[in-house]
Length: 56
Image (cartoon, helix red, strand yellow):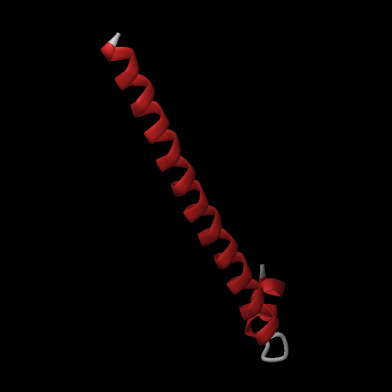
């Protein structure tokens, strides 16, 4: 743990650490947005199916 803290605190690797964290957060946000879009599509399909089944 101490080695990791020294790595984060070193100014030599500061830009590397910041850039890698930004990449990870960007990927996580992208995954979250894409999953929300898929969920909305699936909810529409499900609502259409249940609506059609209720009419029969």
